[in-house]
Length: 290
Image (tube, rainbow, N blue to C red; front, top):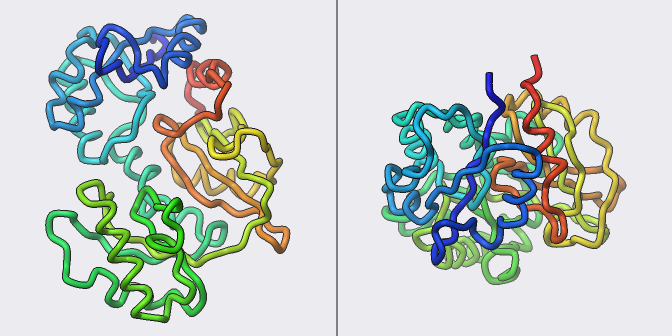
């Protein structure tokens, strides 16, 4: 079987070139000898997957995607459009959703990540008060509001942090503002997580391929800091999740315990500045673990 290729996002202004954000990675992938093909991320988001994949040669095998995030429903359309051309994604739509959205990965990481509750919501059909009943079962204390994929930590007090989740008025204000700011980009619904204090040493992003550590890098938000987390128990959770290429963002809690802050699909997780991903791409070209 031929080794997999990589599908990179194209530059919206110069469609024969990779998106500038991924240009160095695309060049690094080619240095490994891998095939690279450009896809139109804007067309994927617009619900036109046929146009998005028209440059992918028919019957050209399997691919890893490497590019911008997309909603799980758009990823499923992406998968079907490639299948119509006789090609396949190595991360199927179910695995993408499982790693990309918190409700998909939370059970496998219970006990390793802050306690969380959530409510599925559609940006097109929001209830009058999306926070009603959200904190039930979480217990008292501070919390973090996010959707199934992202928080708004840059609007920390306005749309992210709740000093006491049992303060219904404050919780409603933060959730309401978060939903308002997310608008049409609200992903899946609203999540309320228990707040845990971490030491200010930065996060480590651990890249897993077929359940094994392929790379440990700095988090893109703290590129100059690279903690060294313990990974044995986390590896068990990654293997239980059953996704081929995932990331775990890890931080050291103030009591000295390493915690999983987020899990993500590796295809849409960012590398720190200055890392072109070549070592990671080489790991992805190997045969799947049995």
